[in-house]
Length: 264
Figure (cartoon, helix red, strand yellow):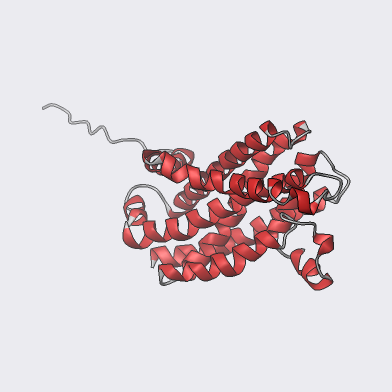
């Protein structure tokens, strides 16, 4: 009697299942790459041109720099913040509620932890690529004078991770897609305007300047300004610790809330 041998597939290691999630999002994204990539890449460039060139004659020099050179680091951070926020609010909500992508992924051998890690890795990698794109443009425009500016790419990754975790928290509590307008208009937009990305913090009233220190984007902007300008005279390690601290605080909260929303 012949012996029957069942050749069952071996369980894949965790890192391969995480990369499988990333690979799934990457393939979907690149099906419409121009429509997906151009807006988050061009918006900070257009903002830089509109303000850095159009208003430069009225603003003059800021902290010893042309206004366009002052804006450049903030625009690199802006593309990471907005890209991560849109991806983990509208993108996550549609995958979760309408497309049922998460149900399909969790029906495979991928665990919830691997799903979230794959999502975060994809969003952060995409944000670092956008940061590299904006950095390349401002470098060609002559607004970057330090090789330290290359650190803007890993900082874009950290920024993407931070705002992806924040977006997950919001998405876990939202019941209707239009409610994301409150988050984007009431939280993300003020962070953009009052974090030192558009004008120096020391020109703001004391109360707003103090409140800005508790905003994560402020510390990301300070880090980007240091590496793009090549000026490390400020409390760089303190800003880096603040960004990492926000990530460490948001990670378990976003994980718990999103798991409750998806798994229940």
